[in-house]
Length: 500
Image (cartoon, rainbow, N blue to C red; front, top):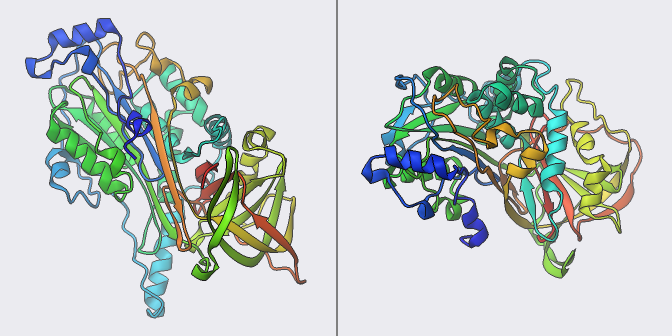
């Protein structure tokens, strides 16, 4: 994984103009000075299926003399000493009753179910307003993949941008609120907290974890209220150390590795916090669940995948079951259910139609969002028929890394990328601070047992058919789209498979 594209994820998220560099270097202690040619910023990685981070650089000015204080937050983990050494406050994660096993007592089983229901029971209507961001950003970042695979986590980027909104003000904040479909910062906080909790699952049978963190430098002061808000509303832990020291960089690498199950350690080993970094926001998503009905191991066999740049041979998993076949503008789709409420949606373009045309057709995100949990368990997509579906799905392990900056500009977020217009006053008094790069990396792996990635959605089961359904072969032997949705039906991961 340590090729040139992989290293781009870590070679910098933010840049500063020459005048600001000179000013910062003149004021910096000798041990912090480095030649401009060697400067780099942190690219905080959203691991396993998604990676994203923001690093801010200093401009001119001074900070309020206010120090972060230890909080009462108790996030599980941090077993690695490098992380614990720099920890200021831990985020409090909800406690969940662990799955008691198939032979457990009825009382134990009911306690587990009650714990799951309590975690899912978020405020009514928290999904309202998300459709625009989910649809626009997915089309923006999945289009134009060419012959390469591409993976994007809408909810991960949503969470990272929501945290960024907390650290900005004025037009910088308003542009983020507009993109996220939030009418106010308070409304965004409520929604982000509900999304985090509705997605969170740690009961021994399914794992879905959205982790956030704030990384501060030890020779600067910050607004404690903002740090407290990130901890309370976004479950973000706070760390403090010497920017540029190997120990602090190793702490970040250890945090990223622990939060993502070690799946992206090949990327993480290159992460470094440089002396010129003002602060870094890191957000990770980790997801792991088995299929509701596993693919039989003896059903896997080699087959031909018709990739855009030539046929390739890969292993296809096979399974036949009754279910709905959905139709949209230029595609058909089926649902592959995960244990305890998640789903992977497989979207196959019609013959002669490519992935970009399907995305441009405008039905993909409305189709996925029509399956959001709406209380009644009803499925909202009308164009569907019941079949006995013979599914042929290639085993795949796909990943990609994206620089989201230009895409975010196209979506209306512009001020935070310009030192003259960016406003980071809620977190620091430094002038000229801006974001120069936003990297997003993601990975999804699929085999006979299930899915490992970072995000998933629950979609209600359709009703039964009184008649024997007609057969339908659903063979994904050419480029296709997929989406992993969580228990509330929101898409945590979407992607394009051009090469399984």
